[in-house]
Image (cartoon, rainbow, N blue to C red; front, side):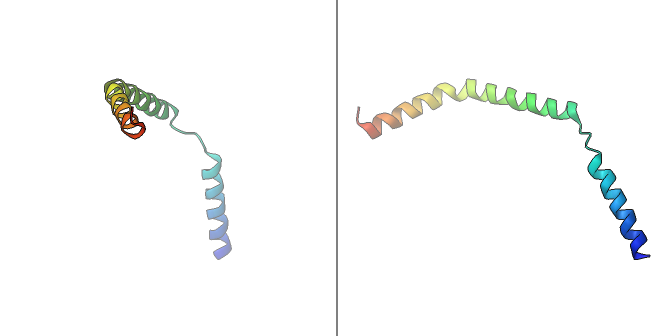
Length: 63
């Protein structure tokens, strides 16, 4: 009985491993939305971060 159960589990696991079809449109959408968020955040925060970096460099270097 144990051998039958082990064989059935092994066969089911093999089918699960071989079935690698993913939700491609979902992953594409997530990737595009993440890239869009990065662009928007960069556009909004870029000048402020640049100024902050310049101030930090000026304080450290003494210029």
